[in-house]
Length: 313
Ligand SMILES: Cc1cc2nc3c(=O)[nH]c(=O)nc-3n(C[C@H](O)[C@H](O)[C@H](O)COP(=O)(O)OP(=O)(O)OC[C@H]3O[C@@H](n4cnc5c(N)ncnc54)[C@H](O)[C@@H]3O)c2cc1C
Image (cartoon, rainbow, N blue to C red; front, side, top):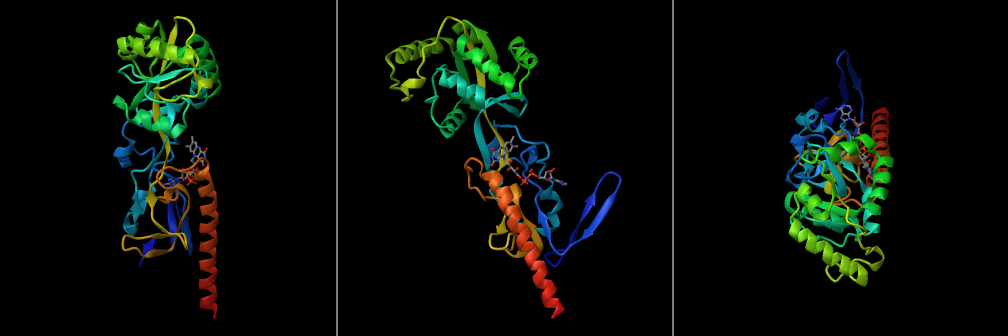
């Protein structure tokens, strides 16, 4: 409900009912827009979504008439360690992938080349994967490692039947393949001659305890054991959008495109753009959600109280 750059309540619509609530202040806390394919910008291309389907971005349409100012709508919080389980949709493999690299697994691209120090910080992994053809990497491991990876996948959100289905359908995504080195390369679409060279070089480096190519710490350089290999794709993924509406940070009020505060209209959480920059630190999104919610509520109630006091005098 708007008028004269002011919000005076809201109208909630369901299939069967419409409710009108009059209020002197409203806090908008409708979350992000990651589930809305149409709203996503180029930065998210090739990166799978693993967030809630409730991040619809509805607020960006129902606030149309207020001409609210927004910024950096193309910013996303991107992580490595995902597999594409449906087009554009990821499941995360963080625990399993971390275990695999601790046990010596390597990451290669479709040319069969290693791409990164597999034991480096997540941000380095993430960026290395984004640089590869198709924005995809392949985790190569031996059977000893796969057994641990499998146990962790089943513990964290994958079923045994799902995983079996991936191996049984090598032509479909996600890529999960097993076999000899050339066999897995072919099934995963990796250059097999180069993969053989890469694995041979890695075996030598692991034996020597030194990785001159990427500087991987010796404690994570473990030789592959046996002739059976497993390859699992690795894609980047996001759940959280980092851009959004602009607010006045001193009052938590939303701003319009003329840079004026909208009277009675406050915002909190992921709907607010840029609160955590281009790459939020761990746990900062929830911290922002809680602290901004507290502040928006506080400033809204203080403004209402002040207005009531002024009108009583
Ligand atoms: C899988 C996952 C893991 C995460 N892990 C972390 C983490 O470890 N640490 C961290 O800090 N952050 C993490 N985050 C991010 C963090 O959880 C979110 O940024 C935060 O929860 C956003 O809170 P919010 O209240 O702004 O939005 P939300 O929690 O998304 O709430 C918005 C609500 O608005 C509702 N809504 C939207 N449109 C409408 C409408 N038109 N009508 C009625 N209701 C509507 C939605 O249904 C939803 O309930 C994670 C997110 C996900 C998805």
